[in-house]
Image: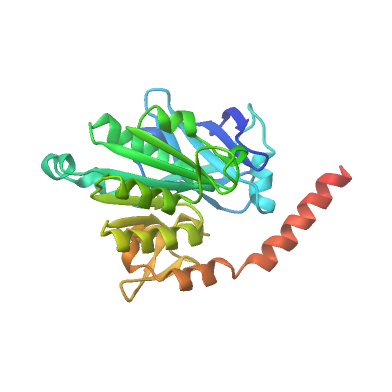
Length: 285
């Protein structure tokens, strides 16, 4: 159960795995996430679903190796199995519940950055399958860090690549590309931004300026994934919300990003210590 069928490194730190999980694949929807444990003593790691295939009975996860537990996941190989994979958890993207008339009136643009590009794929794929126009902007520091470009390019109307250093596509950040597209006459009814917290904050500020409603995913705040630990508390519209059980997607206009970024940083010292111990342990092997 939960056997790894395939693995590939999208960048030196970002790993994609296809996992055998028939029941999860049959129930999964865009925007939801899974809880993965590498072994019996492993930490519970929330990972947004980056693809699913009910007929094949598989789900795809993408993990960035930034701490001991995510490094342990990325070190696993095809043929090995996770101790457990729980899900699908969280609420699906809101368009899954729109009626046909409302859905047909939408014109989406996605802004994706870093590992956040992976969960954009199933959303764009779902909208494409339902005939909804979708443009996607993917940004990274340099061209070698862009991921999912071919996959997303195959299911969107227009794909715009951006790099901070100008090594590929638009020279600049995704929000600048969005402003340029709107200035050229593009019209969007909704923007979905998924990526680093600071990127989502500025994507929302740009959308406010352009008058485009914005949705963001706060999956990076989650720890336990069930609402019990409280680590993913965030203020949305002046009220305390839990990203794992009430999200992970929220109205970007209402999210207190400064608070969310402070909360995201609270475990960094412990994460750095655990990562150092893990790297040293592997190095001694």
